[in-house]
Length: 381
Image (cartoon, rainbow, N blue to C red):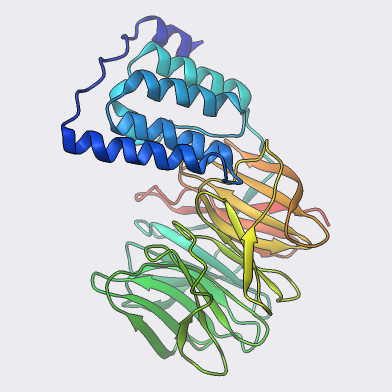
């Protein structure tokens, strides 16, 4: 009702902007690229949304609303409320009508409960990992440039500090050592620590890269997503050097990554195909096929659990945790279930970790002056 009341007092759409010849050329080229992509992309809702925000960026507001209505009408979970690209139409009737439709179609789903709080403020955490052998969680801080180690009851201590912005963290099943992806002003780094927190080695690459998330197999091989380069890197245990997993593989905005339990497949989140699966023995890759009603945009955290993927979606999606049930060959999604959505505690969900038959994830990474709340979401077998 509040949205409808505000909408009654809202303004009309602003007139479309007149682009310079140079801006018009780039704008129409991008529209043409996306329209072509729309015919081939496996995740069409994400491309439809991209068309809407491109029209908004070009100041063509009527077309932006038309395409945004198309995206929202798919009922795939797309939500522009946090997208600054649409600020110019935020006070319009059309905008509030879209928000009302989204709210009606994405009611809250809450299945989790609070596991513990990390009491330190100003962490801005991103990555999270679990060590099953020692029953410890590891949480990385982008603002404090460190990693904290926590028990299951929430007793936390500093594990490592003096890093850059810490993103992905994983514990090696080979020896219990801890790996972390970190980024500083002039380089992207992969840190390797002992289980006790002593630095073993730092692997650094120069500008033009941004390490995001990582996965580790039973042999100790590390797979890293490089968001800026759109690559997946491999640090093989046998060679101890970083290399591109497959030069032919380009995953735009590469982010979350997860390995299948048998270690034969790696799943990578990106745009526009949502998820790409790589067959590791051959290093061949393909987009993960999925139902048309499922949008795989802006997947951040990604974990493998008993033939399914647990994904955290934020950004342009209504923030949620979704379970993606894989087909027998592991190359397609046969069905999906939204496990959590619009939890009142949500204020920036990013990543999580499977532990003790549940999915633990951070509820409020955007809050700087409050403890970080860790939620526990039970997973059915």
